[in-house]
Length: 381
Image (tube, rainbow, N blue to C red; front, side, top):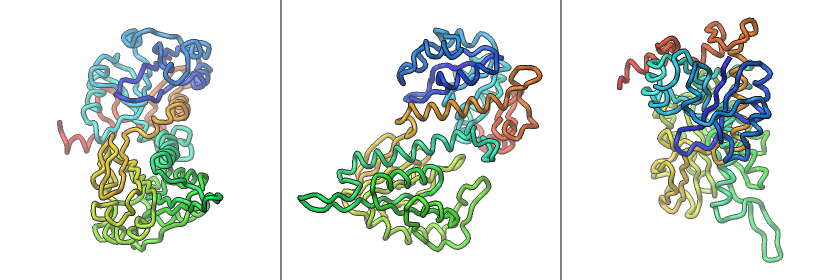
Protein backbone atom coordinates (compact mmCIF):
# COMPACT_ATOMS: atom_id res chain seq x y z
CA UNK A 1 0.00 0.00 0.00
CA UNK A 2 1.51 3.28 -1.17
CA UNK A 3 0.04 6.67 -0.18
CA UNK A 4 1.59 9.77 -1.72
CA UNK A 5 1.20 13.46 -0.84
CA UNK A 6 2.84 15.74 -3.43
CA UNK A 7 2.91 19.52 -3.21
CA UNK A 8 -0.05 21.41 -4.64
CA UNK A 9 0.36 22.49 -8.25
CA UNK A 10 -2.82 24.57 -8.60
CA UNK A 11 -1.88 28.28 -8.66
CA UNK A 12 -2.51 29.97 -5.33
CA UNK A 13 -3.68 26.86 -3.48
CA UNK A 14 -2.46 27.20 0.11
CA UNK A 15 -4.23 24.20 1.66
CA UNK A 16 -2.71 20.74 2.08
CA UNK A 17 -4.00 17.19 1.77
CA UNK A 18 -1.85 15.90 4.65
CA UNK A 19 -0.80 17.09 8.07
CA UNK A 20 1.49 15.35 10.56
CA UNK A 21 -1.66 14.47 12.51
CA UNK A 22 -3.35 12.79 9.52
CA UNK A 23 -0.14 10.94 8.60
CA UNK A 24 -0.05 9.51 12.12
CA UNK A 25 -3.58 8.18 11.62
CA UNK A 26 -2.71 6.63 8.24
CA UNK A 27 0.55 5.12 9.49
CA UNK A 28 -1.49 2.84 11.73
CA UNK A 29 -2.76 1.08 8.59
CA UNK A 30 0.76 0.04 7.59
CA UNK A 31 2.22 0.46 4.15
CA UNK A 32 4.35 3.35 2.94
CA UNK A 33 3.47 7.03 3.14
CA UNK A 34 5.45 9.48 1.01
CA UNK A 35 5.44 13.26 1.45
CA UNK A 36 7.14 15.69 -0.91
CA UNK A 37 9.78 17.75 0.87
CA UNK A 38 8.53 21.14 2.00
CA UNK A 39 4.85 20.20 1.74
CA UNK A 40 3.84 21.84 5.02
CA UNK A 41 6.54 24.48 5.38
CA UNK A 42 4.29 27.46 4.59
CA UNK A 43 1.87 26.45 7.35
CA UNK A 44 4.52 25.69 9.96
CA UNK A 45 4.76 21.90 9.57
CA UNK A 46 8.38 20.84 9.10
CA UNK A 47 9.51 17.78 7.17
CA UNK A 48 10.74 16.32 10.46
CA UNK A 49 7.19 16.37 11.84
CA UNK A 50 5.92 14.36 8.89
CA UNK A 51 8.89 11.98 9.22
CA UNK A 52 8.23 11.50 12.94
CA UNK A 53 4.56 10.77 12.10
CA UNK A 54 5.62 7.90 9.84
CA UNK A 55 6.19 9.39 6.38
CA UNK A 56 9.14 9.09 4.03
CA UNK A 57 10.25 12.52 2.76
CA UNK A 58 11.00 12.66 -0.98
CA UNK A 59 12.69 15.68 -2.51
CA UNK A 60 10.99 15.78 -5.93
CA UNK A 61 7.62 14.97 -7.46
CA UNK A 62 9.30 12.84 -10.15
CA UNK A 63 10.53 10.39 -7.50
CA UNK A 64 7.01 10.08 -6.14
CA UNK A 65 5.79 8.79 -9.51
CA UNK A 66 8.05 5.73 -9.54
CA UNK A 67 5.20 3.26 -9.03
CA UNK A 68 1.40 3.23 -8.63
CA UNK A 69 -0.21 4.41 -5.42
CA UNK A 70 -2.89 6.70 -4.08
CA UNK A 71 -2.00 10.33 -4.82
CA UNK A 72 -3.86 12.97 -2.82
CA UNK A 73 -4.02 16.69 -3.52
CA UNK A 74 -6.46 19.39 -2.48
CA UNK A 75 -7.10 20.30 -6.11
CA UNK A 76 -6.31 18.32 -9.20
CA UNK A 77 -2.85 18.77 -10.71
CA UNK A 78 -2.42 19.94 -14.30
CA UNK A 79 -2.70 17.82 -17.42
CA UNK A 80 1.07 17.31 -17.65
CA UNK A 81 1.25 15.94 -14.11
CA UNK A 82 -1.73 13.62 -14.66
CA UNK A 83 -0.09 12.24 -17.82
CA UNK A 84 3.00 11.38 -15.72
CA UNK A 85 1.09 9.43 -13.07
CA UNK A 86 1.69 5.66 -13.16
CA UNK A 87 -1.17 3.64 -14.64
CA UNK A 88 -3.14 1.82 -11.96
CA UNK A 89 -2.83 4.72 -9.51
CA UNK A 90 -5.66 6.43 -7.61
CA UNK A 91 -6.34 10.15 -7.27
CA UNK A 92 -8.23 11.71 -4.36
CA UNK A 93 -9.04 15.41 -4.25
CA UNK A 94 -11.33 18.12 -5.53
CA UNK A 95 -11.82 17.68 -9.26
CA UNK A 96 -14.68 19.88 -10.52
CA UNK A 97 -15.66 17.06 -12.90
CA UNK A 98 -18.52 18.95 -14.57
CA UNK A 99 -16.42 22.06 -15.14
CA UNK A 100 -13.10 20.37 -16.01
CA UNK A 101 -13.94 17.74 -18.56
CA UNK A 102 -10.32 17.88 -19.77
CA UNK A 103 -9.05 16.66 -16.40
CA UNK A 104 -11.58 13.82 -16.27
CA UNK A 105 -10.51 12.66 -19.72
CA UNK A 106 -6.85 12.92 -18.75
CA UNK A 107 -7.31 10.73 -15.67
CA UNK A 108 -9.12 8.12 -17.76
CA UNK A 109 -6.42 8.18 -20.44
CA UNK A 110 -3.70 7.78 -17.78
CA UNK A 111 -5.44 4.74 -16.30
CA UNK A 112 -5.94 6.51 -12.96
CA UNK A 113 -8.93 5.82 -10.71
CA UNK A 114 -10.00 9.38 -9.88
CA UNK A 115 -12.20 10.12 -6.87
CA UNK A 116 -13.85 13.53 -6.60
CA UNK A 117 -14.15 14.80 -3.04
CA UNK A 118 -17.07 17.00 -4.17
CA UNK A 119 -19.05 13.83 -4.90
CA UNK A 120 -18.73 12.08 -1.55
CA UNK A 121 -22.34 11.13 -0.68
CA UNK A 122 -24.05 13.21 1.98
CA UNK A 123 -24.86 10.29 4.25
CA UNK A 124 -24.32 9.67 7.94
CA UNK A 125 -21.59 7.12 7.22
CA UNK A 126 -19.73 9.55 4.96
CA UNK A 127 -19.80 12.57 7.31
CA UNK A 128 -16.11 12.28 8.22
CA UNK A 129 -15.25 12.35 4.51
CA UNK A 130 -17.45 15.32 3.60
CA UNK A 131 -14.80 17.74 2.38
CA UNK A 132 -17.31 20.15 0.85
CA UNK A 133 -18.93 20.68 4.24
CA UNK A 134 -15.63 21.03 6.07
CA UNK A 135 -14.38 23.66 3.65
CA UNK A 136 -17.72 25.49 3.43
CA UNK A 137 -17.71 25.79 7.22
CA UNK A 138 -14.28 27.43 7.25
CA UNK A 139 -15.35 29.72 4.39
CA UNK A 140 -18.49 30.83 6.23
CA UNK A 141 -16.39 31.90 9.19
CA UNK A 142 -13.78 33.69 7.09
CA UNK A 143 -16.24 35.66 4.97
CA UNK A 144 -17.62 37.38 8.06
CA UNK A 145 -14.12 38.14 9.36
CA UNK A 146 -13.22 39.55 5.94
CA UNK A 147 -16.35 41.70 5.88
CA UNK A 148 -15.71 42.99 9.42
CA UNK A 149 -12.18 43.99 8.45
CA UNK A 150 -13.20 45.83 5.29
CA UNK A 151 -16.54 47.37 6.30
CA UNK A 152 -15.25 50.38 8.18
CA UNK A 153 -17.90 49.97 10.89
CA UNK A 154 -17.95 48.08 14.16
CA UNK A 155 -20.13 44.98 14.17
CA UNK A 156 -21.29 44.98 17.83
CA UNK A 157 -23.19 47.67 19.69
CA UNK A 158 -20.88 49.82 21.80
CA UNK A 159 -21.90 52.24 24.52
CA UNK A 160 -19.14 54.83 24.95
CA UNK A 161 -18.85 58.28 26.57
CA UNK A 162 -18.75 59.66 23.03
CA UNK A 163 -22.04 58.05 22.08
CA UNK A 164 -23.70 54.73 21.31
CA UNK A 165 -22.61 52.76 18.25
CA UNK A 166 -25.48 50.73 16.84
CA UNK A 167 -24.75 47.13 15.79
CA UNK A 168 -24.11 46.46 12.12
CA UNK A 169 -26.75 44.56 10.18
CA UNK A 170 -25.63 41.39 8.41
CA UNK A 171 -27.76 39.55 5.85
CA UNK A 172 -26.75 35.99 4.95
CA UNK A 173 -28.28 34.59 1.76
CA UNK A 174 -28.21 30.81 1.78
CA UNK A 175 -28.36 28.82 5.02
CA UNK A 176 -26.32 25.78 4.05
CA UNK A 177 -23.09 24.87 5.83
CA UNK A 178 -21.28 28.09 4.84
CA UNK A 179 -24.31 30.25 5.55
CA UNK A 180 -24.98 28.78 8.98
CA UNK A 181 -21.37 29.26 9.99
CA UNK A 182 -21.53 32.85 8.73
CA UNK A 183 -24.67 33.46 10.80
CA UNK A 184 -23.05 32.02 13.92
CA UNK A 185 -19.85 34.03 13.43
CA UNK A 186 -21.64 37.32 12.76
CA UNK A 187 -23.83 36.77 15.81
CA UNK A 188 -20.81 36.04 18.01
CA UNK A 189 -19.27 39.31 16.82
CA UNK A 190 -22.37 41.18 17.95
CA UNK A 191 -24.08 41.98 14.65
CA UNK A 192 -27.83 41.93 14.04
CA UNK A 193 -28.23 38.97 11.71
CA UNK A 194 -30.90 38.14 9.16
CA UNK A 195 -30.85 35.19 6.80
CA UNK A 196 -32.75 33.96 3.78
CA UNK A 197 -32.94 30.56 2.15
CA UNK A 198 -35.30 29.10 -0.42
CA UNK A 199 -35.81 26.09 1.87
CA UNK A 200 -38.31 26.93 4.63
CA UNK A 201 -37.06 23.91 6.58
CA UNK A 202 -33.87 25.75 7.58
CA UNK A 203 -35.75 28.52 9.40
CA UNK A 204 -35.41 26.72 12.73
CA UNK A 205 -31.65 26.35 12.26
CA UNK A 206 -31.26 30.05 11.48
CA UNK A 207 -33.26 31.05 14.55
CA UNK A 208 -31.37 28.61 16.79
CA UNK A 209 -28.20 30.55 15.94
CA UNK A 210 -29.80 33.86 16.85
CA UNK A 211 -30.62 35.02 13.34
CA UNK A 212 -33.93 36.35 12.06
CA UNK A 213 -35.30 34.38 9.10
CA UNK A 214 -36.50 36.48 6.17
CA UNK A 215 -39.78 34.88 5.05
CA UNK A 216 -40.51 35.15 1.32
CA UNK A 217 -43.39 33.13 -0.11
CA UNK A 218 -41.93 31.25 -3.06
CA UNK A 219 -44.51 28.49 -3.21
CA UNK A 220 -43.09 24.97 -3.44
CA UNK A 221 -39.30 25.49 -3.29
CA UNK A 222 -38.20 22.75 -0.88
CA UNK A 223 -35.06 20.64 -1.14
CA UNK A 224 -33.48 18.58 -3.88
CA UNK A 225 -31.62 15.29 -3.35
CA UNK A 226 -28.84 15.59 -0.76
CA UNK A 227 -30.45 18.51 1.05
CA UNK A 228 -29.51 21.08 -1.59
CA UNK A 229 -31.87 23.86 -2.65
CA UNK A 230 -34.00 23.22 -5.72
CA UNK A 231 -33.53 25.34 -8.81
CA UNK A 232 -36.15 28.10 -8.84
CA UNK A 233 -38.58 28.87 -11.63
CA UNK A 234 -38.45 32.33 -13.30
CA UNK A 235 -41.56 33.35 -11.31
CA UNK A 236 -39.98 32.23 -8.04
CA UNK A 237 -36.77 34.12 -8.86
CA UNK A 238 -38.78 37.31 -9.43
CA UNK A 239 -40.62 36.86 -6.12
CA UNK A 240 -37.35 36.18 -4.31
CA UNK A 241 -35.71 39.32 -5.71
CA UNK A 242 -38.70 41.48 -4.78
CA UNK A 243 -38.80 40.02 -1.27
CA UNK A 244 -35.08 40.62 -0.68
CA UNK A 245 -35.15 44.33 -1.52
CA UNK A 246 -36.12 45.51 1.98
CA UNK A 247 -33.56 43.27 3.69
CA UNK A 248 -30.85 44.43 1.29
CA UNK A 249 -31.79 48.04 1.91
CA UNK A 250 -31.12 47.83 5.65
CA UNK A 251 -28.01 45.61 5.48
CA UNK A 252 -24.47 46.83 6.11
CA UNK A 253 -23.01 43.46 5.10
CA UNK A 254 -24.40 40.79 2.79
CA UNK A 255 -22.88 37.32 2.55
CA UNK A 256 -24.06 35.26 -0.44
CA UNK A 257 -23.35 31.53 -0.25
CA UNK A 258 -25.29 29.92 -3.14
CA UNK A 259 -22.44 27.96 -4.74
CA UNK A 260 -23.93 24.92 -6.48
CA UNK A 261 -21.80 21.90 -7.35
CA UNK A 262 -22.01 20.99 -11.03
CA UNK A 263 -24.05 24.08 -11.97
CA UNK A 264 -23.36 27.77 -12.54
CA UNK A 265 -24.14 29.92 -9.51
CA UNK A 266 -27.55 31.62 -9.63
CA UNK A 267 -27.63 35.42 -9.85
CA UNK A 268 -29.39 36.44 -6.63
CA UNK A 269 -28.53 40.14 -6.45
CA UNK A 270 -28.98 41.96 -9.75
CA UNK A 271 -27.45 45.26 -10.76
CA UNK A 272 -30.84 46.91 -10.19
CA UNK A 273 -31.06 45.41 -6.67
CA UNK A 274 -27.63 46.82 -5.80
CA UNK A 275 -29.12 50.29 -6.22
CA UNK A 276 -31.43 49.62 -3.24
CA UNK A 277 -28.47 49.12 -0.88
CA UNK A 278 -26.88 51.76 1.33
CA UNK A 279 -23.76 53.46 -0.03
CA UNK A 280 -20.77 52.04 1.81
CA UNK A 281 -22.37 48.65 2.41
CA UNK A 282 -20.48 45.53 1.45
CA UNK A 283 -21.15 42.15 -0.18
CA UNK A 284 -18.97 39.04 -0.01
CA UNK A 285 -19.77 36.72 -2.93
CA UNK A 286 -18.85 33.10 -2.14
CA UNK A 287 -19.89 31.80 -5.54
CA UNK A 288 -17.80 34.16 -7.69
CA UNK A 289 -15.65 31.29 -9.04
CA UNK A 290 -18.72 29.64 -10.61
CA UNK A 291 -20.30 32.79 -12.03
CA UNK A 292 -21.22 34.70 -8.89
CA UNK A 293 -24.39 35.40 -6.92
CA UNK A 294 -23.97 39.13 -7.54
CA UNK A 295 -24.28 40.66 -10.97
CA UNK A 296 -20.99 42.40 -11.71
CA UNK A 297 -18.81 40.60 -9.15
CA UNK A 298 -15.34 39.76 -10.47
CA UNK A 299 -13.25 36.80 -9.37
CA UNK A 300 -10.19 37.89 -7.42
CA UNK A 301 -11.24 41.52 -7.29
CA UNK A 302 -12.83 44.03 -4.94
CA UNK A 303 -15.14 46.22 -7.03
CA UNK A 304 -17.56 49.03 -6.20
CA UNK A 305 -20.96 49.00 -7.91
CA UNK A 306 -23.47 51.79 -7.22
CA UNK A 307 -21.58 52.64 -4.03
CA UNK A 308 -21.61 49.03 -2.80
CA UNK A 309 -18.32 47.19 -2.33
CA UNK A 310 -18.47 43.66 -3.81
CA UNK A 311 -15.68 41.25 -2.85
CA UNK A 312 -15.07 38.12 -4.91
CA UNK A 313 -12.25 35.80 -3.83
CA UNK A 314 -11.59 32.46 -5.50
CA UNK A 315 -10.49 30.44 -2.48
CA UNK A 316 -12.06 31.54 0.80
CA UNK A 317 -11.12 28.40 2.80
CA UNK A 318 -7.51 28.86 1.69
CA UNK A 319 -7.42 32.14 3.63
CA UNK A 320 -7.60 30.03 6.81
CA UNK A 321 -5.28 27.41 5.38
CA UNK A 322 -4.00 25.91 8.63
CA UNK A 323 -7.36 24.77 9.95
CA UNK A 324 -8.82 24.17 6.49
CA UNK A 325 -5.89 21.80 5.85
CA UNK A 326 -6.41 19.99 9.17
CA UNK A 327 -10.06 19.38 8.31
CA UNK A 328 -9.42 18.41 4.70
CA UNK A 329 -6.54 16.08 5.62
CA UNK A 330 -8.88 14.27 8.00
CA UNK A 331 -11.44 13.99 5.18
CA UNK A 332 -8.77 12.39 2.97
CA UNK A 333 -7.69 10.06 5.77
CA UNK A 334 -11.33 9.01 6.15
CA UNK A 335 -11.58 8.17 2.44
CA UNK A 336 -8.38 6.14 2.61
CA UNK A 337 -9.78 4.17 5.53
CA UNK A 338 -12.84 3.32 3.39
CA UNK A 339 -10.54 2.20 0.55
CA UNK A 340 -8.45 0.07 2.91
CA UNK A 341 -9.10 -3.66 2.61
CA UNK A 342 -8.40 -5.46 5.88
CA UNK A 343 -7.91 -8.85 4.25
CA UNK A 344 -5.31 -7.85 1.65
CA UNK A 345 -3.87 -4.95 3.71
CA UNK A 346 -4.05 -2.77 0.61
CA UNK A 347 -6.19 -0.08 -0.97
CA UNK A 348 -8.95 -1.31 -3.29
CA UNK A 349 -11.69 0.32 -5.37
CA UNK A 350 -14.74 -1.52 -4.07
CA UNK A 351 -17.63 -0.58 -6.36
CA UNK A 352 -20.08 -2.18 -3.92
CA UNK A 353 -19.25 0.49 -1.33
CA UNK A 354 -21.72 3.37 -1.60
CA UNK A 355 -19.09 5.98 -0.75
CA UNK A 356 -16.63 4.78 -3.38
CA UNK A 357 -19.35 4.29 -5.99
CA UNK A 358 -20.58 7.82 -5.30
CA UNK A 359 -17.27 9.66 -5.68
CA UNK A 360 -15.47 7.50 -8.25
CA UNK A 361 -15.26 9.29 -11.60
CA UNK A 362 -12.78 7.23 -13.66
CA UNK A 363 -11.66 3.63 -13.32
CA UNK A 364 -10.01 1.13 -15.65
CA UNK A 365 -9.41 3.77 -18.31
CA UNK A 366 -13.04 4.91 -18.64
CA UNK A 367 -15.45 7.39 -17.06
CA UNK A 368 -17.59 5.27 -14.75
CA UNK A 369 -19.88 7.93 -13.29
CA UNK A 370 -23.04 7.98 -15.42
CA UNK A 371 -23.88 11.65 -14.80
CA UNK A 372 -20.41 12.82 -15.72
CA UNK A 373 -20.22 10.50 -18.73
CA UNK A 374 -23.52 11.94 -20.00
CA UNK A 375 -22.25 15.48 -19.39
CA UNK A 376 -19.07 14.76 -21.37
CA UNK A 377 -21.09 13.27 -24.22
CA UNK A 378 -23.15 16.48 -24.42
CA UNK A 379 -20.14 18.75 -24.08
CA UNK A 380 -17.15 17.28 -25.95
CA UNK A 381 -13.84 19.12 -26.04
